[in-house]
Image (cartoon, rainbow, N blue to C red; front, side, top):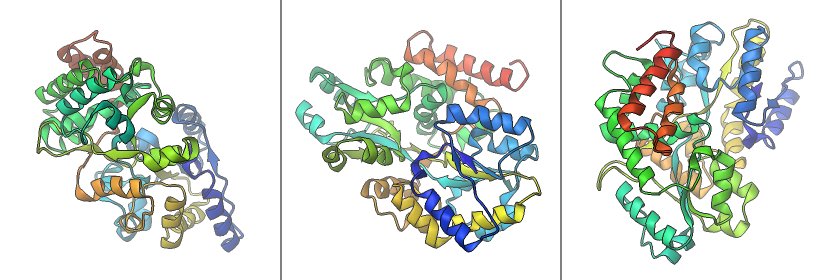
Length: 388
């Protein structure tokens, strides 16, 4: 099995060891790459060479691999009784025409982690309700000599984690982006809804909410800005508590808090990015299929999966395991998923990931929302092999 899921590098081997003890004729080799940037080229080379691992993290190509017969329809192989245990949002992202080509491993929601002490020092009373409130709070933090919100916009797909939920905030419809992602008729990046979301993003950027150089900042750098006290807030996902436990000062781990994304207006829903960015797909090769599916069942068994998620401070993708969460921050972020605040943010559709590039022009001020919207549409259509 191949992935970049370093969150479980300490605990997954224990599960594998227990499985192998119960199944002495099966050996599981677990390879974890350092990051998606290192992982994806290796996976693509394996696909091209026809030598895929039996279980692999499909990243944004889950539907493409299934459509091309590279990965199995897991629902057909293991049945709806198996797939129904997952959150619907996790299943939907991997499903096309009734076939499900992957299953969620770690679900995720995004929010804003913050340091209450920094808020208090800057005179900020309570958590910002709206983006306007966040812009006001950011000015107060800058006046106090600290960067407001650390965020990662490098690579461009990381920026989509922040931007794409703004489309749902504008439309108040979590299915709107799914239709845009699939290229359904009447849904384009030049649509008024996308332009309005880009205008909101531009407003946030011009409100000096982000740290200097956000366009070049990668995820680990943004997180470090937060836990070293150089930024009062961090926009990130529900994997963050895992890293903070490993890297931050224990006192900081005990004191930081997390809040929902600000809403577009007071009283509006606090839509937050929610999908299972970490998932597993199964190779369609016949060799070792029975053993592979047996291991997959074991991995998600009640005894193993909940314990593994808790020990790695991960957000589970199944409903039953969500009820067993022990980490209070993870429990809080999972409650947003249970309450229905989640919306799509992963570009699974053909060419969709290309829109992250033009988004950088809003960050550096070199393009208007209308221009960026057109560049997004052009990028997607070019990636699909046609001109807009």
